Image (cartoon, rainbow, N blue to C red):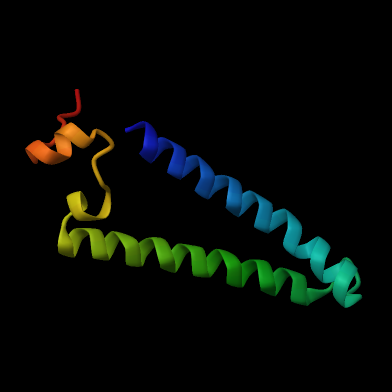
Length: 87
């Protein structure tokens, strides 16, 4: 469970880094003005791609089962093939 939490936190960290670095990179490296429309379009494309990727991941998880998508953190539990109950 802790591994899943860490993966979620890292995913959020990567998204925050990209959202903050992309406009700075476009301005510094490509010489765009800070209020250029292409910056907003780039951020919109980033968020749209992230949303579509998450929807695709959910579709894959529903199709093949979540136990194949999210591995058990406890190796002994993986060998037993058991599912951990919540609650």
